[in-house]
Image (cartoon, rainbow, N blue to C red):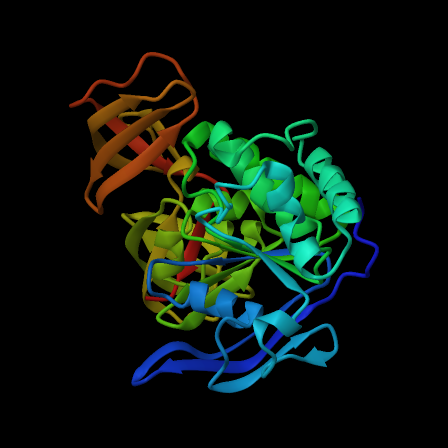
Length: 355
């Protein structure tokens, strides 16, 4: 099975959704390019699930326009939109076989049962479940059940495929495997996909672009690399991965760079349209290196906690600027708590951010 239809873009043009006096989505605009996977990321209550439901037609906008391809679908119900959704709960029919679950939407849409089952068999093969069509969902574990849900959506060959927290019911190892499966299928079939999650690592792993939402608005949009390396403010820095948020001072501007003092050390960083004066600095934990006490060009510190995690060490280091979280990939003997060290800042993963 392959999706023979060309991929379609999704456009939000100043979309607002109110539930009574509560604004769930507030004048949101973005574009999902055809054939791309864009993730809506944010904490509970930020508006990401409502945004997904607006695309699906399960909610209607209070204001603004929603376009799929060149068609304004703002007032179309879910049944008239060429969109499929993979739900957090899988939503499989327990009394139906896997094959019957996958073919259900095709049969309901009027396709002959024999043809629907043939398409369903192709869909199951595509997600690595060939030969399992006669089983009941209860005979499969969580990972295969989620693949059944994906196959059921894929066989409908939608213009847009939506994922609502699809991995939240899986354990850590299965989450990694299934997210890789979803990403591979999306790229192979050139499917326009919108993916909702609150898991930062998941978003970084599957996305072409990420839209970080906060309080019903977009806080920042960009590639995974842009959001991780150059968060726009403290919220994004703290939400997308781990970050040490430090008080700093911009001493002067020099072209596109700012000369920044943090804990007595001077750094040159992109100024990001900030002016001289007090500033906030986001420092990723893997961007900090620990050197021996007394080393030059660094900040004195004391190790207060050391944790071995198999492929790296994690430290908490107390400095005059506060406690720093440090990830060290070097697996030599751990530095003992109470030991003096010098904290040095690396060349990447450090950015000036707005308060």
